[in-house]
Amino acid sequence: MAFDGYFISRLISEIEPKILNLRVNKILSDENYLQLKLQREYLTFTISGQAGMFYLSDEVINNEDYEFSKVLRKNIMGYRLRSINQVSIDRTIIFEFEGLDLIKGPVKKKLFLEAYGRNFNLILTNQDDLIISAHRLIHNIENKTILPNVKYVIDETSKILLNNQSTLHIDYEEIKDKYIGVSPLLGKYLQGKHINLDEIKINPVKNLDNNQFYWFNLFETENVKSYQSLSSLIGDLKVLKKVDKKPYEKFIKNELIKLQNKLIKLDEDLKKHEYNLSLKEIADLIYSSGLDLNTKVSTFNKTSLDVNLTLNENAQKFYAKYKKAKTGIDYLQNEIIKTNLRIETFDEFSKVLEYLESEEELNDFAEALTEYGYKYKTSNRRRKDQISITKIEYLGSIILVGKNSKQNEYIFSKLAKNDDMWLHVKAGTGAHVIIKGEYSPKIIKKAAQYAAFYSSYKHSSNIPIDYTLVRYVTKVRKSETFKTTYQNYKTIYINEVNMDILTNH
Image 1 (spheres, rainbow, N blue to C red):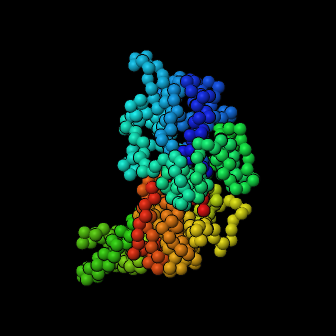
Image 2: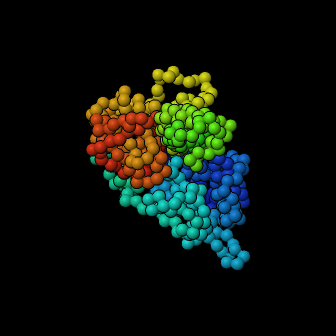
Image 3: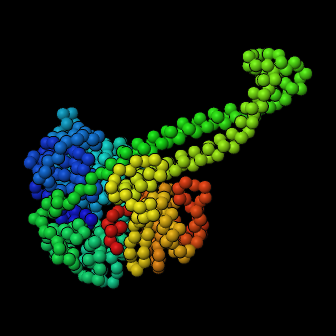
């Protein structure tokens, strides 16, 4: 995907003349799209899959309200779209609306689009940038808060404008990191060239080999499709439907409930067994009391007895309970340890599920759950000894990514060597990543992107990724899932995770 700052700039130029000053007549939404009907035009935002894109669509979606669309309907229905402004040449866009309030008179409201792919957001503010609501509310992630009545602040960047500066002597990684609005796809094209982008005519194309697209043809292949407009190009892209995680969430939740109930019962049984250990002392006292052992009494030494049994029979009953408790306590303590480990396992499953987004990843996840009783209905199940992993070739090295416990253990125990590099998100759940071959700073940064993307912190910023040699990583024993400890590590911080970087090798 290359929905970068330069693409957005051309897209705004294309759609602005068609919708500026038009009134918002309808606001529609479903799981994939949000639409603002501006008279006969439908300004459409993608909110799943390749999220954060916007365009004019000919297709009207079936309305399925969600909370943010209701907020928009309440706040900007009947308002006119007065301007569309791009912040510098970056991926933050401001849609400004103007309406009439019976008391306040003319009122302006802004819809900020942060077009950051899977990390995208839509934020509605008043004219003073105070947040009314947002598609995704955020509370204090690296000092960024998106909550009602908080002032919205546009993210700062240290990048500079490309203008007509030469890119002859720097590679595409440096280009995209240095210049604002440049995607890896564009950076790769600019590498070693001196090009004025303002002189290039808009020619929307999609690479049919890999589904990448751009506002002009920068692809080496001839297998491309051209479009009449940038909107028609975006509309033709396959929107990735949200994968259904509910069956897995339900299974994990039910298993955790059963395990918690089991743990409560085990704790109760352990307390009973610990009490029954003390019954031996009562039985000993009965025999040493000098009382007639054939008598029947209700209490002895403040201990309740079975009045239907003699003292001798009660003492023997206590001895039997003591013997059962003595052998049962070890069993119960071991079961409590096993149950706590199983609870940890399902807690980890729950965290892993959060960052899985594709059908393939969920299929791998489902297979991992089958060992714990999950019924996986598919005709394409792999053999037990067949483990799927992600393998990326980059700058002469190979990056291996494990996305679940089985894959993590496989790449670490079977594929990794002592001198390979190992990466993992700091203090969180996530993929284990191995670099085989050279591990220059660029390669480490690339691998760290995968470790960040497949982690519980993927939607955060400034994500810490620890890395060290495999020789300094140790598997944690007595754990149902694959866990490690490590030492002699360094940390790299990933400020932004997106599929552009991950798919450009």
